[in-house]
Length: 105
Length: 105
DNA sequence: GGATAAGTTTGATCAACGTCAAACTTGTTG
DNA sequence: CAACAAGTTTGACGTTGATCAAACTTATCC
Image 1 (cartoon, chains in turn yellow, green, blue, red):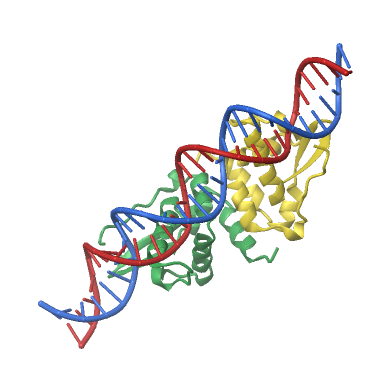
Image 2: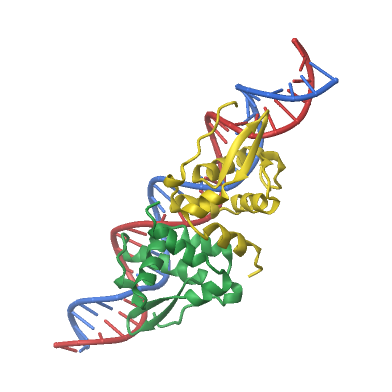
């Protein structure tokens, strides 16, 4: 497990990939929970309606899109929201989606 | 052809549907062109890399998500961007995506 | 009215994607 | 070291969605 996972540079961020990452409700839920808590969380710390294998897949998609950063602490995989990087690449996008998420309509 | 198509009310706008609509590059291109021109355009007036049947499908998805409004003028189907409605339902979302679209990275 | 133009509908195809179970890897802890 | 806990990887499956060709509908124009 030990390998440090790949993260894209801000200059390599791609709108298409970010939107593809955020269109999935489970992944948007991950981002929302990460934002709401305001702190790093281990993969198992999220409330998700899918199995571990699927969760791993979703975390990978978010990481490769640049939305989260992942690092190991022992056997725990921690996740943090790359808010500043996202704001730099696509100003207002993350905020707008997080806000829209909260609105009933 | 004559029937007036269905458009959702602003109160029925749904984030999930809007994101699903905007995740497709062709549909995002339609929205971008509509925004850039600042005027209503007929379906055939867009520069799209797909056939007419597929284009019809994409316009339908955008309409049902609330992103565009469609109306007939003779045999022409005109399209207009529902910018104000979108801004009301999801402030900043459309702008952020349109802006992100323009950035090289 | 006949021809043409603009879109739509239907039916089919093909690729992507989310999902899970099962087996595996790695680290912690008694 | 043995057992357990946390994630990952692999392989398979089912659904969804984008796409097109062909036939159709509706309106305009000579």
